[in-house]
Length: 136
Picture 1 (cartoon, rainbow, N blue to C red):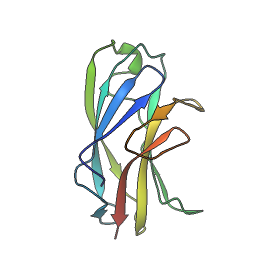
Picture 2: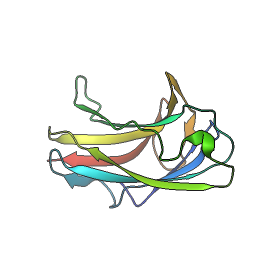
Picture 3: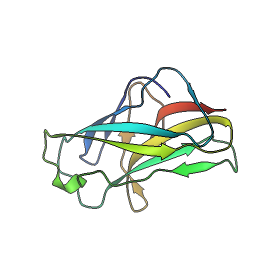
């Protein structure tokens, strides 16, 4: 999995997030392995109720295997106070199909995504590429 931490910013008030995945470069894993993703958020403002974190593991190929790790944070965003740091860990089970995968993350409310930016990571359609994994 990619690097010790990726930092990105969301425009819905959830603020700055750092995701720790461990390792550096592209890591390898076995088909069906479970990986831990440790999320650290700094609340930079108030957040409306209902926002959740999306986590998608995808090879990018048409018709490829897709893993959904969407979740609500351990403390709902609307409970957060500006200046607080919230840290928790989630697990995602990798596809059983060998290949190169990207772990994408961001925030969503229904079909709306929060604007995302990241100075040192790829961002596409308000999703941040937070890790790359070779499953073999």
